[in-house]
Length: 165
Image (tube, rainbow, N blue to C red; front, top):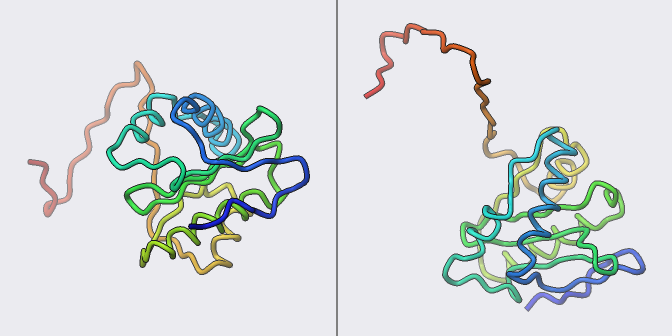
């Protein structure tokens, strides 16, 4: 088992997350989304729903970093071989995300996983560089699409070789 002795700044503690911390993890993720994407998409129901899956093992699959009672960073290796690492914007640049990412990657390797993924906003240049340095490469791009209320849809003709069925 990968140790919890991460190289963290003084005064921070690391331990597995708990189900009753879904709200704190959602708040942390939302703060990161607001910082990098200008809008939050995740909420407590998203986190709790993901964590309610069969086989979720908080002690093995998660880590939280705390400054006192405040959750400042979190990491998870989920059942889809996806790594999640979030660091509160006020604590970026301190090596916390690198430490958690290293823990999660080590856990994936320990489990014999051949490939894992980590979502990184395009505006998180430092995070993307850390992952590139570890050998990650972009696999795909996610898009958030929005349709403003009251704006009518425009009809577009599809190319001849495209059908919607």
